[in-house]
Length: 589
Image 1: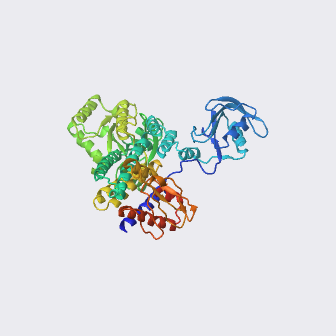
Image 2: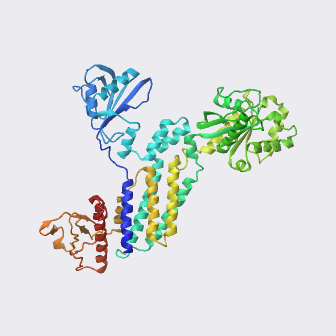
Image 3: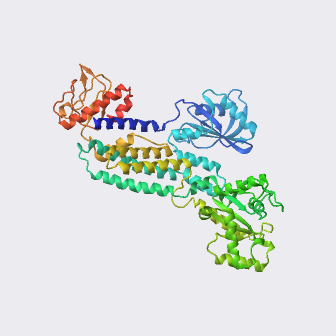
């Protein structure tokens, strides 16, 4: 009974996996959708896309039924006319993409027209007047491409990131993800997990009867250990891909009147912040986005750090410290005129300035860049003295002499800033594909916990250990949108040839459970009858065919086969009592 309960639980688990699968066909509605695909606003050329079974109707109606139909995937110059008034709306290019060789996998058409608002509105209105066509919802074309198996979820997210990419590095990362690099990595891991799960399930079900060797589990252990190591290495990327996607958080911090707002204006090349000789001018956090060497940076100018009785400024100081704690990189701005004249005390002074901005823990974890501002007010001797002290110190973060007023030293500062940002983001074109989404990280951490469960229960309860592998597989499937139960069964049959010459035949539609032994050649493929009537049969290649009479007495079979068939019939009754659809029973029998 214990093994019976285990097998019934397995059926429930497989049904859960099946429910997680995405539909690999287009939407059931059969509706045809249309929308402007090239974005809003005036432009030279606008693209209107149509997708669905009525795309042919749309193309013929707007180009004239007497005109020749376009050759697939070739541009054709046509007048665009209103299907009812026959008024010419525009003259443009039309394209025909028959499914499944289209972006959505459905029949699709495109109208490349002039991008004036009146022209676009006229063509959209003409399409809306046709039967079976409706405006597309946001993201519906991509959703249909996903349902058709043209894109997995990682490629869909890569496409979205590419559309919203604002810097060169973001474009490279998004293009690589849209090309399927990240999806292929996760698909490979899913394949290994599916194979391991199939082997464990096969060992549980068939080790006694099918002579599966114990070494199978050792191979599974080795494969899962290697996979776990790869996933953990993938997770230990210091969030570089996520940081590149959303932007590096860079905070400008330091004492009052050090030149923080001037530095912000220098980096964004516009007067984004008020600059004044009056200390405490900046009260709130001022944010702006900039492109630093192709990397996205979110700059935050903060209030000068000092003790004050002004409640508003005190709140600004609190927000400044809070922003420093959230930052990826801190630009600590120091007034170089306040540095000691004695070179021996310069390093200690700068270390104290860092301590004012960062706590002890932050100083060791947060990337920093020291900016010694107002260098134009220093003598050449003072500049050389400061540079010499900085070279001799190995405890300080990188430091730059800079004048925000004259732009002196700006090239060296920008180079140092770019290097710091590049280290935080990494190179999107080298190494393995980057982890770009917080949801990917969450699902992968679930995988790690589930594979740890396999290790924990491997020698205690193999069924619970298999559950850990199954949960890890579901976690990966949620990243890509691809989860399937039948793949596990396919691998069981392929790798172990279970039932290669042995078959199980069940009647799942009648009240009587019948399993017939057709191993003898003269009865092979004969129809099965009950009370003279041919019954519906569901067959698979999983178990030997045996005969069971109505009272479950067993004839001409080994005890092992009898127990196996009896277990399967027990679950068949349970599934029938639960009104399980035949498709589910077919999966398991």
